Amino acid sequence: MSATQAQETEKPQFYLTEEHHPENSTMLGFWIYLMSDCLIFAVLFATHGVLGRSYAAGPSPADLFDLPLVAFNTAMLLLSSITYGFAMLQMERGAKMETLVWLAITGLFGATFLAVELYEFHHLILEGAGPTRSAFLSSFFTLVGTHGLHVTFGTIWLVTLMVQVSRYGLTPENRRRLMCLSMFWHFLDVIWIGVFSFVYLLGVLG
Amino acid sequence: MSHETASEAHHAHGHEAGHGSFKGYMTGFILSVILTAIPFWLVMAGVLESRLLTAVLVMGIGVVQILVHMIYFLHMNPRSEGGWTLMALIFTLIIVGIALAGSLWVMHHLNANMMPMTQEMMKNMP
Image (tube, rainbow over all chains, first blue to last red):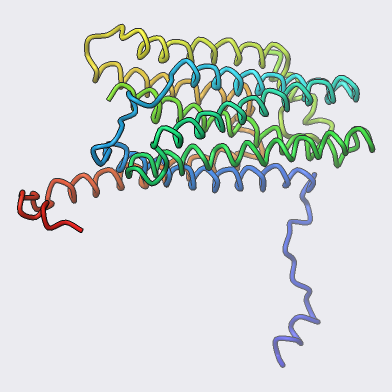
């Protein structure tokens, strides 16, 4: 009773009235989402750190991993990062067509990365080194698979935004969305640095 | 630095997130290529005798490359969003550090304190 009265007399304020540009809070909010995503990966990395040497008398990373293929995949992701950067620069200039072209190239690199990763997983499972073989392989498939799933959704998001941009142009909303995806895409590349260093290179090193 | 002036100009227009420049992206890209090539070369060519040194170098270079990506691709700087992005990042790094170091530490001790398995136990395993 008294609570409703209090509500009527003074309206609660949930934001700062003197905020200059509230539209920017999207970027901060998205950053915080990325940080929480970072925690998911931290836990998966910790799991792999604990289980990564438990081969259950099965194959070890040195037997399984094809480093040239991993290097190729790393190159794909790195190239997709820089081409996304170029798309953002074109977006800044307001060049719609160029933005779309660079986004398409980024998407192709992303799709290549996914294709190679799926090939690698398929190959491992055919060799009898599926996620059920040992604790090491379970944690490997979980960690690398989660990253791959992120890239998959990033690629879907990218295609969605390409449709949006080609239909409605570089509107403020689309620019904001492109900036969010930019952060997401570069973030995935940062995670991949951890994956190839910690899982593949240190794994093969033994 | 051109990036600084560019973000300053944007600030005046009401944009706060820095977008970087062609030069910034290229610098980041070239640094990343070098920082990716070195660890792959170290492991694939087996350059160093010491495994430990190689491992430390691979992880160290990885951390440097993550910093390069943060600065040149994600445009992190202490001023973006009034310092809140950096604050969120530092908080996350603390949690990540606790989760990683804690897990490895605890699980290592659990492993070390496990009762050693005898042949008899191995035979009776399900």
